[in-house]
Image (cartoon, rainbow, N blue to C red; front, side, top):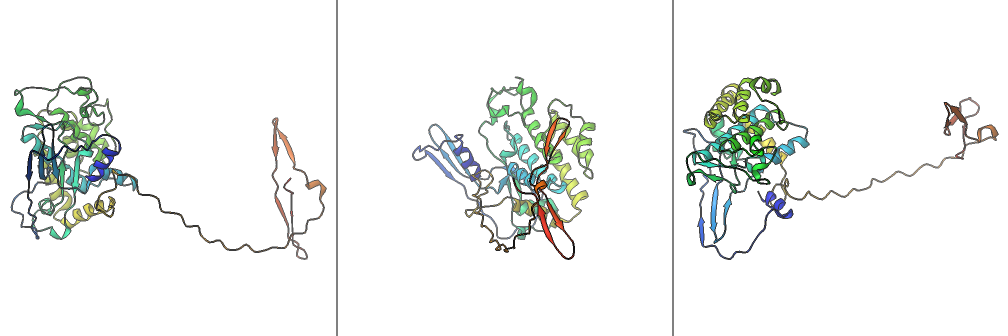
Length: 364
C-alpha cells in the first residue's frame, strides 16, 4: 500500500533510486466486468499479488501491483483502538484467504519466508456485485480477497536440490521473533516450517486477540482452552496445532476447505449478507484521506484546533457580612502522631430566618 511505502521511506528502510529507463517493461491488463458473473466453481479468497507491470533493470527489478485497501496489521490495530476483536465469521474468511494464498505460493515451489500481518493485504470489493451461489464464492467473486505480498526474500526451491534446507542470518526478516519459527532463531535449518509457523501465529492472533506466547507447548487441549466460547474449538485447535507445531503433514488446502465448510454450513447457513456487512464494517474502520490511501502507515492526521467555548459573564454578588472573629483568623493546627495537620479554610452558613450570612476563614 502507499501508506506502507511512505512509512518505509520516512524511516530509511526504502530508497527510491533513479535508474533510468528499464531494459524490460511488461504491462499487464486486467478486465473487470461491470456485473459479477455467476459462480460456477470454487472462488479463491486468497492469492498472490495481482501483477500490473514489471520493470527489469541491470541490477534490480520492480513490480507494480493493484493497490489494496489495508493490511491485516492495520486492521488489527483499528479493531484494538475500538476495543473490538475479530468475530468468528470474519476470522474464518480471512483465515481461508491467508491459507489459500500461502498454498498458492507453495504449489509454485516457493517459500515465502516472511509471512506476517504486514504482508497480507485485504481488498474489499463492491457490495452490489455480490451474486448468487455459495456465500464464500459469491463474496470472493465480488472482489473481497486477501493477497500475500513482499517476495523480497522468497526462496525458489527449483533452484536447489530436492531436500535442500536453509538458514536465516541474524537480523534478517526471517528472524522476526513474533512470527519466526523458534528453532530457526536458534540456528536450526528450515524449509516450509517458517511459513507454517507464521501462518499459525497470524491465525492465533485473530482467534485469541493476543500474540502467541513462547515457551509453551501448544497442544490441542491447551489451544481449546484459549479459543473464545461459541467458536468451533475443535476445528480451530486442530488447525492451530498443525501450524504452530509446523507439522510436515500439514495440508494448507485441506485446512482452507475445512474452514470454508464450517463458515458456510455452520456459521452463515446461507446468510451471505451477514458476512458482507461485517466485512464492510471493517472497511469503515480503516479511514482514507482525500487520495484514497489508508492512513494506517503514514503520518497521523493533524489534530483539529480546539475552539474555546464562550463563557457566560459572572454575576456580581454583594460582599457577605464578616464580623470580627479573632479566634477564626488563624489556621487551626492539630498534632497527631507527631505530624502537623493544617485545617484548610471552610465556609460556615448562618441559616437563621431573620439573617442569612456567610462566615468563612480568611485565606491567610
